[in-house]
Length: 335
Image (tube, rainbow, N blue to C red; front, side, top):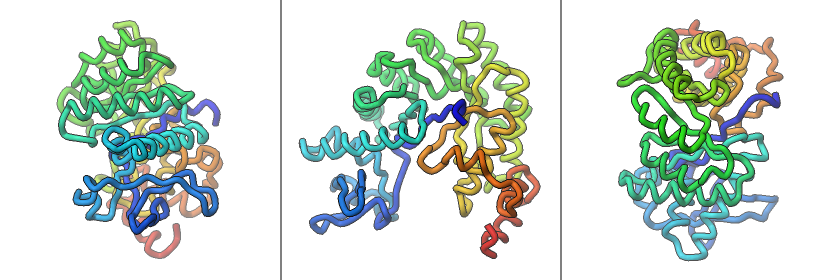
């Protein structure tokens, strides 16, 4: 599906891989992260001492992009090069798998704003040097977004993720920098509980955005996708919202963090695939996804007659309270 716009989500400091997993090995008695693997050959990035005593590391997780950024900013020349090469490799993988934008988020790099800004500017500098596709600047903090956009300098028309009723002030920066924008369905103070609440919030935000001169086709609406493991209606609420959005604003792009839907459940790829398939049927033409894991050709051509598709679809449409049928099928190896 060539007109589906992929916002590659993987260059985030939240992302982690398992210690001892396929993305790691041991070199000179030290655990390292590997990349650019071809048969027995690979490049690797060392794990700094600063990460050894962190909670994620002790729990068996490696926040690999956080490590790459830390090495790029703080390491000696060899380790700086490792960090740069690691991020460059991921840029290439995302683009080769269809990413039209690269979403960059460094919020978890530090709890200190100045360090977050330093990290954002450093990553943006790497991306603008090695990427053929535009940037999506993603942060919960407006100052981080602003600094990222300044560093990027509109080399290719960027995307801002995201604008909502709780931070309308970001509109001025979006207009100044001539950005495309993700418009979120959040209210001034909370997350929406239903598809109708999403439309109410979006109607306010769309009125403001359009009145300021932002074109409908430059807007990516995010209806907000929440884990179905938390509430059985969350999948159907998002799908219904997508359908309503497409009817109300036919020219907008409809996107969202698609993998959020499967958090806390087994066989996440299956859930993500079926959800994206249903979202596209309802009118979505974009997704904030990892294109390496969520292969569009596979998703578009899913066999809807398979039992695993039917069970997963039933759950996502709100017909499987507490995901009971799905979890039973999983335990019985029927998925």
